[in-house]
Image (cartoon, rainbow, N blue to C red; front, side, top):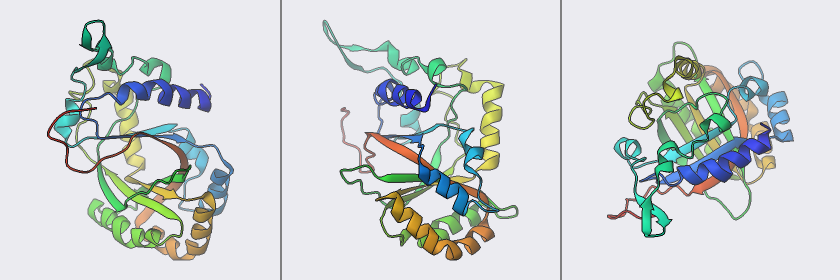
Length: 267
């Protein structure tokens, strides 16, 4: 599939099924972008610790984020509800059980699924125009504990990012060990295959966290990173074994809502 065909299929059809999951409180789809900014990122700030763009491009084409109030709500998300119009009124839609049934057509390999511990450093503001979004993946240096790495990223490193001109939002996410496949995917699903398990282990061997950065324009990011390059390098050298930036096109399918849930169910 071409990048545009994949994006159209994921957002145009697959997302229309996923957004109907019961209890879904937010849903973002990030498709890897194709732009000249990626060349600047690779050529200018990859260096000895940064990973070249092509090293990441073969790993994934999209990153979906689903928000639920609890892991229990997530595991019960495929429960059928009467939300499909029919001749006799609202009916239960069996197609929700397989989320459209397009996995074999959309993905070359089973999708990776994992829960994250989310740290909202700066709540994102989305103006009424396309913004520039980056995902920064990072791997901690050998000998650094998970606690030290996470603390440094959310404080010392985040303090440098928070002051960036044109920054609209900044969130840091760390994978959890929570099992998010059992009770969500049906038994026999390809996500339980040995190949899928090995891919998941390989991903977590390479990355210990990822951040989301929203900027008003690409120029704001380029100017900030160029200006702060010397200040950021010592921090990155102390805590990161390697890291990379990847530009993504974000589609807000369901705007994340972190407020208290209503005492009734509605769509």
